[in-house]
Image (cartoon, rainbow, N blue to C red; front, side, top):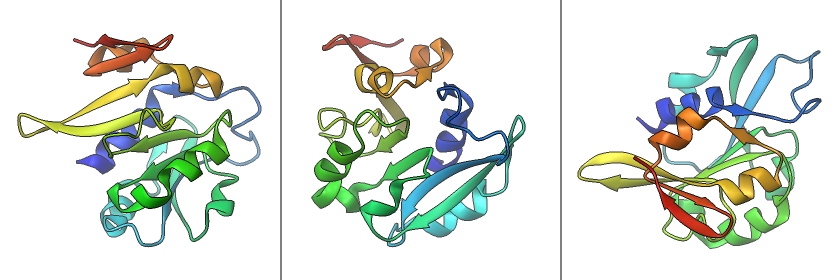
Length: 156
């Protein structure tokens, strides 16, 4: 399910002009090589298209390899280095998605959580906008919680 959400998140985000290279039709979702759902993510979404873009799941081994990523998924397993990773890419046009309780307060943009046995998500619009990413109002309406201007707003 999370793979489908990640794919759909990419459909509802606009990156700044020039970030998605017109000569390279790739849109890169980066995950760390030890990601437990790596196979599921790769088999479900790698190679799918979003408009003229081809969605790729790219494995990274070190935080320094995040350059060239358009999206970054940090699972619970990355909790130990989550704060430093998010701090190192703050302001860069990389959509960050995670699942720890403090993901948004650490500077992440979209946080998965389970509510009533369903996957839900919250959005930190402040950090998304600081990274020059535009999140569609349609996605904002689906969020359980949207943080704007330092104050959380309830979604639907």
